[in-house]
Length: 113
Image (cartoon, rainbow, N blue to C red; front, side, top):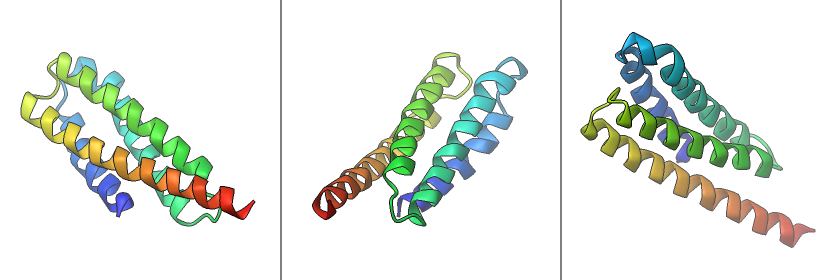
């Protein structure tokens, strides 16, 4: 389930951010944690809503924000290449699952109208 993947992602990224250099921890790091938590909360919200396209669209936006923040962290050497590779794969999977869920929700909503 994508909510569990997002939970695992958030659980993984928070300790990583705590190890960022002080100059990045409170800017990029805090943005990364906030966006990851927002992603998780949007997916949790979508799980418990009948009309969940809005929460899913917000989750897709958050996945993309997190991707760019992780890329920036890698380019600034706040995370190493192994961590970046892991993060990229995890975010790709979360993004594909969320996008698929959004697509199926929109198709379902179109059939009901």
